[in-house]
Structure formats: structure tokens, C-alpha cells
Amino acid sequence: MTTTTTTTTTTSTAAEEFAGLRNAPVIQRRWVTVATGGHVGGVFWHTQKPTVVLLHDAGSNARAWDDVLLALDRPAVALDLPGHGRSSRRGRGDYRPRRLAATLEETVRSFAPGGVPVIGTGFGALAAIALKAKFPRSAGRLVLVDALPGTLSPGLRLWPSPSPEFTSRDEAAVWLEERGATDAARTAELETEQAADGTWSWRHHLGSLPADAPTALDDETLWEQLAAVSAPLLVRTEGGPLDAVSLDRFRAQAPDGDIVTVHPDPQALADVLRPLTH
Image 1 (cartoon, one colour):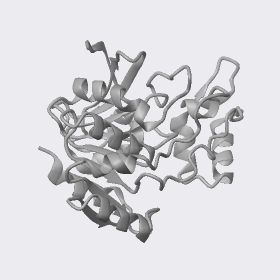
Image 2 (image 1 turned 135 degrees about the vertical axis):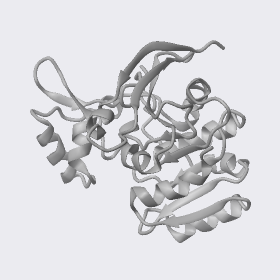
Image 3 (image 1 turned 30 degrees about the vertical axis):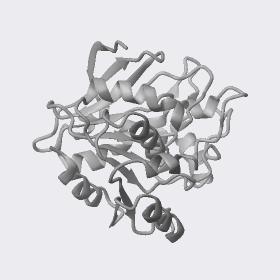
Image 4 (image 1 turned 90 degrees about the vertical axis):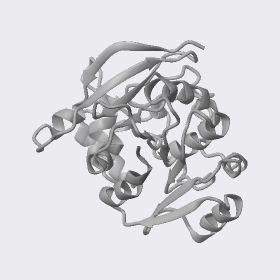
């Protein structure tokens, strides 16, 4: 299988945001063309080979990791999952975690070869499980943040398809707030794009999926794959979504795994991830 990385490398908008900081990191966006079709984008922090790969939640993008990666201050790449951010959409709208494993393996092998840790949150955590289980040599230690199979919040309820169009990003933010979203203003800023007619719609595919697209992004059958992964690390935030039942099941099915509890702030998560970098 041949992977061709595009020659286009651009400065990420994250770099523009952090340009005023002392010792601001070099942040760039790159793309890889994958054999499964289309391209996958990644936001690279620092110029050295990435020491970690990060996967975001459904309806989000690589920029969701900005604060964590700023605190981590290590070479890293945060990916835009297929159908999200600047990565290509899939015509059939199938974004189930198992369906993403091959595309993510090819992307990780291109962007961060050598089996570096893969960190995933929400839907990205399930995609990370599928990746690690199917391609154990392409990914290093598996790190799950506040997510396990069967624990995702109702997947596409926040993004009914078709989702409405908006006259402004502020209107999109209000719509998100009414649906219970957190950090609605930033989500609206990062996740909307303007059409030629001046309206705004979601950049990700979840708000405009084909009628026959799978809408269940959660997958409890991934527990079997997680049980086969060596030494997974589960990071849970205080007051986060994982309950005692989920934690007990993780302990039972991944007896060689570890659980770390952190305060819900980027610095605390960065402190846990830093020892995994090399």
C-alpha cells in the first residue's frame, strides 16, 4: 500500500492564536492522501517527529487539543478524523470506529511512524481502540480520555441531519447552547464554514449525512478488542462522564491497564501525557 503525503504545508490558525506567546511553538497543518480515498489532515506542534498522536471527539476537530498541547509542549500531531475539520468526507457517511481503523493506520504511519502513543477522547477514543487492536505495531500505548465503549453521550443527537443553516456564527453558538453543548462559542467558531450565499453550516459531515448513513457511532463490541490491547491507560476527569460501573468493567477486562484520575483542566491532562512522550 502506497501512501503519498501532499507537498502542501500551511501555518495552522492555532499558530496565529498563540503567536504572541513567549517561545510560541511552530504549528503547521499537513495532509496525507490515503488509499481508502481522500485525504486526512493533521495539526503538527513543533518541528520534530511527533511523540504522540491525538484523536478528537465526534463533531470536533484537531483544534480541540490546542490547550492540552500548549501545556504539553512536546512534538505532537492532532488529527482531523475523516469527515471532520479539513479531512475528506466519506460519500456514504460511514464513520463507525472500525471503519476508520485502516485510514487512521495509514495516516499515523505517515505522520508519526515508530509506534508512538495514541490518545483519544470520546468518539476518538473508540477509533483509537479499533486502530490499536487491528494494527498493534503502528500505534504505541493506547490512552483513552473519559471514554469507553458504550459510554458515549448520545452520538448524533447534538447534530441532527440535516442540521440547520445559520445567518452567523453567533446564531450557531446559540443553537448549540440550546442543545446543551459546552464551549458553544468556540465550537461554532471552529466547526462552521460560510457558503457563497453567506449562510453558515457545519464543517464536519455529521450535520449533513446521507439518509442511509449509520448514525450509531458508539460500539460496545469494541470491549473485546480493548481486552486484547496490552496495558491501556484510562484517564478520567473528576466529575467526568465515566461511572463506577464503567471503571469496574475496564478493570475486569483490561487487568494490566491503568486508571488515572485528574482535575478537569488541560494542564492536568498534559502532566499525565508528558511521561509517555519520548
